[in-house]
Image (cartoon, rainbow, N blue to C red; front, side, top):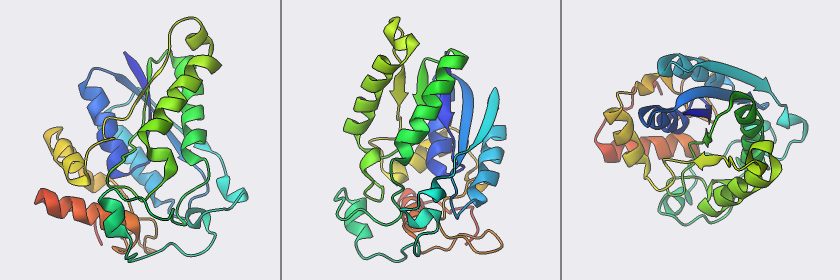
Length: 229
């Protein structure tokens, strides 16, 4: 079995890819450089791809910063120490934050779908999570189901009766459960990078949504985060 995995260099995509590898998939890793200000994650994506032993790793440049619309591509400041984050982490999406990148997962999944057809892959792997997340609409189960339906209609493979699976093995796990799974799979989370606003020397800020959710996950798992802050 083959699968294209969307690999950002973060904790979630690393764990999702490793879970797919455990389940017998040969991995083809796709990393998208989309004009994100936290481009430090691209270095981590390369390290993670190497650790996973993927068959091939492609980095694509798709400059979503040209559109703007998100603090992750330099429009406004990345929010820090949001009071609303605790309710978000408990499953109450609340207001969608400025770190939402318009249509990002749809664009990424479409690129992965194109490569999946070329590689003869049966599945696309994405590390989205519907519990400990920042309120993004394109991390929900109903969205993934809709995309899988689109993929079956829009591709030669789907029309010929070989529909793609969209695998989101972390979808219903808490951040702590994701970290525990990674430990079971023997992952080195020191290779990963999650911060939206790293310092000039690459350290995590410790205050953005991603840093706080990660810290909460490690604390609840009773483990120390190996990433520098």
